[in-house]
Every structure is written in structure tokens, then in C-alpha cells.
Image (tube, rainbow, N blue to C red; front, side):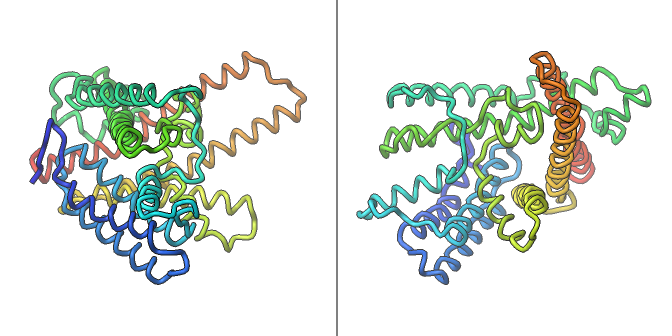
Length: 372
């Protein structure tokens, strides 16, 4: 049963705190030499996270984001305890110092990941707290309005989820594309992608306020979660420069372990990218788990598709650059601007056409089997 306070679902707080506590204590007090104990504690964290995920209410978008976050905790715990073998620094001599270091590692999982510095370098602690409080408030207000369906064209009918609406390209070729279908598709794209970004930004800002304002964590350790949208003119740039990196290192490190046997560096890098997206797909599939006929592995296939498309995209870019250089052409400002605009159109088209397609199949199943 969902328990809400000020519109926020808090029914998972206690189950979610158990794996966090296990992970924090394990990192703080179990040395890297105790491999067996670390393995047992990592598996315990995984089991506790899965328990919280499967017990969660599945009728809210917020609980879905929390489930994805819990899945990320399992990956990071495994990454820290078993792959990186991290432990508190020598300077953390007291129990409190070790716990604070471990707390920062779990709640600010950005070890070894480059984050663009969007905050002013001379920002003071007070300025940081005020800015994060404003961001937390504005993002929550924006998400509340977005989740109310403010972008949708009024009532949504069963016919709007017809299989013929799955592909905008197919509708365009058949001459059946309507303004209403385009409107719904665009609204869903914005909600699916930017709704998640708003929730994560709000949660991250709240965590930053607690860590810096109450626990005294240095504010420079809490940069903004998302990068500049202007850098997302390729799908690779979307993930590497704009989208959050909360789980990226955990994905790539696990993928690197699985592909360490591949001798060719270029092939190994490609496989790391593909496996990273596959692991992300498995994480999202577990997070979206729902008993009954509407359970689907669509997130897994969607993220595997992302990985393939990103590699193909980069191959096209590399070939064009080589051709450009081989012809002895110089890059002009106008040409760079042109290709950046083309890139923005490509990314927008991909998310509108492909990124929200699984939503239609899920909606049809929900209507057929659950009367939604």
C-alpha cells in the first residue's frame, strides 16, 4: 500500500534503507582483503534491493524511478566491494569519518567519472545551498505539472494506442499521420525522458542539501547531476555529456570485466559499450518488473538497440571525418553549425520515433488485461 506525504510516496523508505545501510557499513568497515565477506555482503545488498523493488507499489512513476535507483545501488555496491576494492582513505581514522566517506560513496556514486563543472568555480557554500534548494523546488513543481498530463491534448482514448500509431514513419508513409497522433507522441517523449530527468534532479538536489547542509560534505563534491543539453547533438553525446552518470561507471566496469579476454582494443571498447547498455537494460527491466501478462523485457531490447545505434552513429561520424580530411577540406564555422543542427534533429527524431514506442505496447496490454 502506498503511503504518501505531501504527494511523495514514502512506503519504500524502510525497505530501501536496509540495502543502503548494508552497503554503507560494508564499505566502511570490511577491508578489501576480506574477499569472501565482501562477496556475501554484496549478495545480501542485491537481495535486499530486489526485495524492496518487488514489494514496491507499481502505480506511480516516482516508485518506478526509485526502483531504478535501487537497482543502481546493487551495481555500485558490487562495483565498489568486488571490482574496485575501494576502502576508506587512511585519513579516515574515526568511525564517523569512515561512515561519512562510505555515505558519500553510496549517495554520490561518481567515482572515476568526469562531470562537467556547471557551477561557478568560486561558488560559496551558502550560494550552493540556495541554488540547490531553488532547483529542488522548481524541478518538483515542473514534474508535478508534467505528470498531470498538461501536455496531452485532453482525454486519451483507446484508439490512440492502436498498433498503427507505433511508428510515425509508417503513418507518414501511409498518409495517416494526424496532428493529434503527433501531439501525443511528442508529449509522451517529453514526459518519459524529461520527467525522469526532473525527478532525478530534484532527488539529487535534496541529497546534496542534506549532505552539504547537515553532514558538512564539501559542496564541490556535489556537481549538477545532468550536463548541458546543448552537447546532446549525437546519441553518444546525449549519454556521455548530457544525461546523468549515476550508474555509468558501474555499467562500464562490469562490462570491462566480462570483455577482458578480447585482445583487440577497438573490438573490446565496442563490446564494453554494447554490454554497458545491455546491463542498463537488464537493470531497467528488473526495475519495471510487474507480475501478470504485461510483464515485458522491452527495456532490455530497447537499451540493446541504443547500444547498436550509438556504435553505428559513431562509425558514420568517424567515416565522414576521415573522408573530410582525405579530401583536404577545412572545417568551417557554418559547416559545424549545420551538422550540429542535423544532430539535434537526429537525436529528437530517434527519441520520438524509437524511444517511446514501447509505451504504446505497454498501454495496450494494460487496457486489455487490467482495464486501464
